[in-house]
Length: 337
Ligand SMILES: [Zn+2]
Picture 1 (cartoon, rainbow, N blue to C red):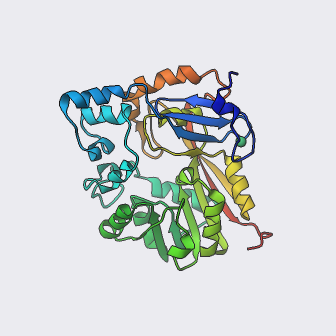
Picture 2: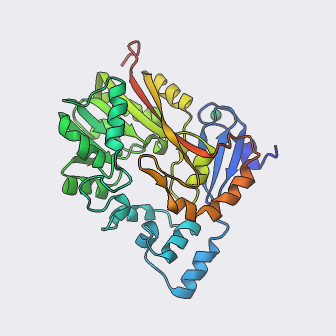
């Protein structure tokens, strides 16, 4: 395979391998390690068609950045898909009073993309003999909070964290949850919560964690020897790279299950259960829980399908379906902490 300068200077942060395959999509270049198969995302400096929204703005005037993050009208959708957001604007997403993308002012998940998720995960936990009843639970990055709202009544205590202050405040004020601001890439959990928990829930947030071992190190100070850690995540597939390729800020790392298992093991945790959470087609597959057709992805497929053909003969798994996995860990009895 042709080696670009970036590939030839590659050194995998997970396995030390130095051969990677570039997966080129509209907004990102994803580096898939040929050895361990973890995929790391890099935002491109320039997007091929970003001149289009710029011309549209020049012709028809600007619209505010909040609208570009929660796009509702055609023009802002065009900007969202083809254009470049300024860094930092991601927080506008949380400042938008309407928050329709995060469930708005709904008091339950009914009718939102999170509907049914609490029952699904509860069934997974029960299948591994983990019951929420009378337990102390900490849920990391649990926004918009419906999951906590629906399951916390059976628990003894439920703390939910979110990396944005605004989102944590909304969970407190609208859903009445014990919600705190916590960013696992910069904050130390043990300095924020003063308690020990029986269950730690990491639902689809670990793909945003840049240093899992450091994060687990801070978790250790708020758990005890019988605590279980539930961790669900999106696996490294070409389908996921394509599916989220028009979002500027999507998951930075697609971890391979073996790497997750290894990083947890290095911190003294062993997996005692693993469960696939179904698959979704990268063009039309709906949300993980609600299924159906994701029309947003269908509409953006003219920008994603060409990249399928551009990459499909590379040294990667070109299956067309995104895959999620849930794993459950507990302390390795031999671990010393
Ligand atoms: Zn590697």
